[in-house]
Length: 149
Length: 188
Image 1: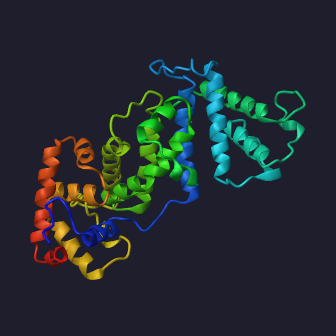
Image 2: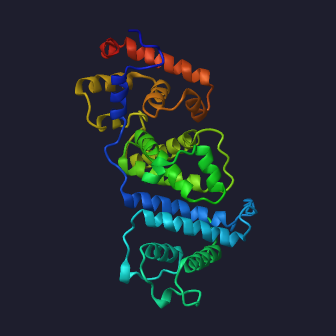
Image 3: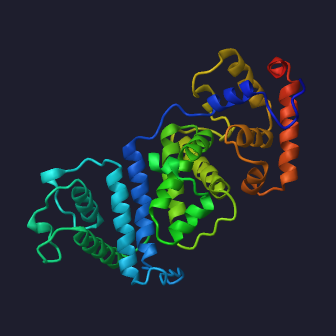
């Protein structure tokens, strides 16, 4: 059989793939760090913070840029939960940044009853609204610190 | 990660979703292209740890392009130069630290000796033959058959016409086929 000049036999292709495939792999922790690093750039950018060159169209959302950013963070928070990140449980110490929103989102999704210290809105209820409030606060903090790098 | 694997949206649709505020679409892009980026970075850096660092830098680089990124081709076309440049830079830095000489054969970096298990005889022969190819020819062979990029994607990533890619690939495969060390693997 004549192999065409732009193709290789399957066995040769498989050997090439094996030669040029690293044996190591990514741990879940590494994936998490990479995505967190990437998100630290996206979240403020989506809020239109820190860059006059970025035009963030939010008319289809019908809400302010800060709320849109908070929703993005909340979505990210539930994604974070899906990764099975180990909960710090009763030992969790609030950080004052977006991780608080992630932690609360995870605990609520797990059906845990949260203490009064998480009632950030002061309405006697700890629910998704508290998550959003924490996320919005994190965006404002990010803005104060200079937004996207 | 399983949800990312099930996502049927194209790279362009995912980019549009991120631009519209759906951050989870970035996760899909990441898991879809992570292993390709890692493999490519390893090829140029010659070091697995460096290659993972390259992957992080490249996806942060990608994140910085939002909102507003317009994808006119596959994501691999956009990321290929970034992965290559970052990996080579890391490798140069490492070689300077250990007092190494010239960078030498960028494509190999010794990685052909460290891949996954395979057919010992064929692999040894193939390794020798691949080393004998020019860097240009070797690159298109690897992009085509290891990275599984289309000819147009390769052309866009390298910044050359598709005809040039076809020509390089033609000559590279012809050279492989004609080499006495591996010719029999081309025969039924």
